[in-house]
Amino acid sequence: MSHASAQTSDSWKPLLSGPLQAEALKVAEAITQDVANLSLEGLPWGLLEGHPGYALFFEMASRTLKPELLDKVVECLQAGTEAFARAKWHQLDLHGGLGGLGWVAAHLARRYPSLDVEDLCAPVDEHLNAELSRTPWAYPCDIRSGLSGMGLYVLERLPAPGARQLLARMVAKAEETAERSEEGITWSMPSSHWGIYGRNSQFPQGLYTMGVAHGIPGMMAFLAAVHASGIEQERCAALLDAGFRWIANRSNPEGHPGFPHYFHGRERVMDDRFSWCVGSPGIIAGLWWAARTWGHPGWRERTQEWAVHIAREALERQPVRGSSNLCCGSAGAAQVFIRLHQENPHPAFEEAAVRWIQHTLALRQPGLGIGGYCFEQDPTKPSPNIQFGAAGVALTLLAAATPVEPDWDQCFLFSVKAPSLPTAAP
Image (cartoon, rainbow, N blue to C red; front, top):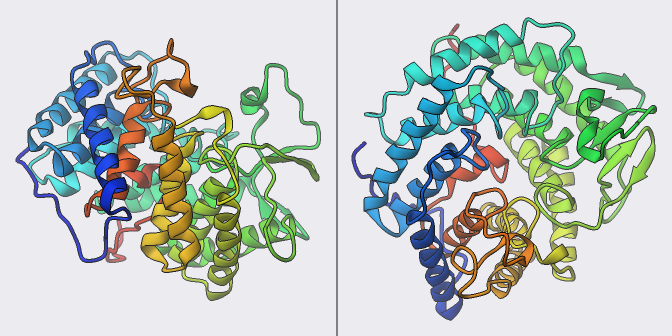
């Protein structure tokens, strides 16, 4: 891999300026130095806590802070590939398995054409193709461990041979697993995954999760990206329209949508978190980008209204549990609004983004943890990874303070960038 330029663009402007920008850059540099000095041996090969995530982190840092960190990207990809080769059992999850390793490799290969990832990605494609033939389908609809996350990996593979065929099969699987009613269509979480809500949890009326990490918005964004790629457009549009109708029918008819954490049947179960993984910021990110990528005027208008109400709510909220991280903390909420601000000039998005960057910087504890950050402010739990740790915080600070677009965030659905490709047969 050769060093790439920072690739600034006229469309991406730093959110921050003056002393706040300087502070964000100083903190990002401190985190980067601490992470670069760590031993990354023995890590898992999942994206959130393992080598693929650190590869994304060092690649962004190499384009914004220190070009020499690109060598760390190569080291992380090699370590992840070696761990994959040694593994006896292969999960396909985007965030914890092969899908994430493949997504990072395919994503970086777009910027660095000399990076040959076919030997890594081809086996992932084969595993996924075989898994799609299994019945019954045992995976949820979400991006973390389900169909839409696997689909984001395949979208990143376009125009590789067979990718279009895989995506068509995934759309068929989305149709097969959808639940239809007068309200529209939706996707319930399989009982095999109910354990994320507590051991022995039971949902006899069905579990319908709204959070973007484990829920329905991920499926909507995936289908929109497939539609924008010119694949199975009629089927995707039908699923999207009925899916948005279900969500709207379960939301407040006017004003703030009032999204719950999940539905048990029709019962709304709320959660006080205001973050990417759980809460309105992550939900609206998935839905706003789905409507925008699909291009439906009515749903674009509706999701814009929802997003403005949620941004206004953000001005009144505080981080829950003192969390600064990307997953369930202030950095993740900030990244949602940074992206909305860059795509849309509404002042509420800019104000919310700045406010949550300020929250993130205020949670720093200099001299502790990684660059001043620990998991939920606990000094006994320094965490460097991109999910719960300081690396994720640094990625958000760099997104806010530099003119470099943070395309790493597509694997979290902070943004959706469907490739513009011809519609030839696979």
